[in-house]
Length: 500
Ligand code: CS2
Image 1: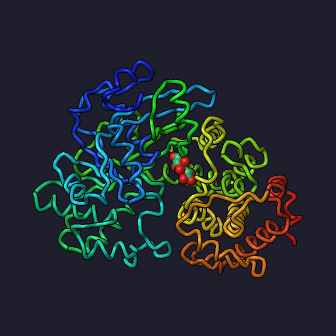
Image 2: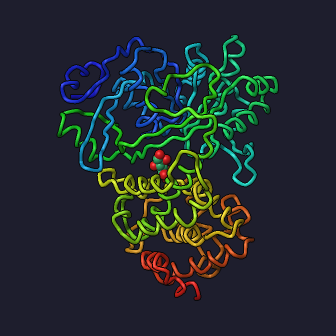
């Protein structure tokens, strides 16, 4: 059975399918960046809203901005935008459900005007984004908008034929303003602290260059809620696709697999209405800062702390890392000794429980979250997830050895391109070549990798950090046994290699 609207009644004999009338839905949300995460998280919440409560206003029109999204467009369009969400519990229980909240998928490169018109349509109340941590186009050192990006320059001179998210957002807002419509809310769903404030700063910088009056209108009228999003969503593998085919006879070309845990905390700052997501457990709070900081500094950083050395050692997945007592302990010590002291107390949250729960989530044996996904785009992730904790500990005199060890491991990973067993690594990073170039030659100059100010800022000038980094990187290159060094660190025998 191919997954599509026509086959829904047959498929519903196998697994739950939308019971609401999809043909009656209006697209209140346009979402840019329809990856696995959007489909396991926001689209799942909206699906539940449509399923449990009446209302037709908040369906989703998905948008892909890049040529690389063509495959997704083809699959979703042949499946009437239906897909199966496969929720994998740690005890082996599997819950599969067909999600129907996305009603349309547009590939922007094929018809930019259609995307602008859809965003500018009166029904659209929210434009949400998962464009990845690296997708916001800011200069990592200054935090300012990067006008040097050729695509941005193109968008500034071709306002009606944009390529970037900023070109689309401003083109659609310009049209709404001219049409006398209220603007949509811009809702970032990426793992960046103060993601709403940051998006606002970027949109305003771009808009101001194009049209000062438009920028003023945006500044006054558009809501940019900060939000914390959470659900671990690994890359879909053929194992999951085959599972659906073999167990239920469903042919879904791009199902999504995820953990049972789900969380969304949002500042209630919407300029044009919002769905009643609180009915589904979404938390609306006045200030999301403590939640996002906790999530990014523990969960996302914790992932990298396992993933980077995991890749070098040859652990294929995060649960395999957690199954290795040395890795699990190393990650917990990082959280306890370096991340937690910086977080301080968070009102209403038991941090110890939060960390215990993270350990369980990471160890879920049915998630199989590949370390290659976790290490992907480390050049955008580590400066956001890990380095702020390191810097704050440098300022306060706190421990830096775990975070620093991970940066040293990242140098080795970027340099060697293969694990310690000689198996080549799948490195996915837009900066892959630059990282490799920066790491080559480490053995002649131990701190050469730090000569990347766009990533490390001025850390190379910090004596304490450089000393710690140099001993870690030397040990990793010389010992060629990262697990052993991690074991030394967690069992306090580290003086052995630190003195070298
Ligand atoms: C991961 C996240 O990208 C990463 O490295 O830490 O994708 C993580 O799985 C999600 O943020 C979970 O909510």
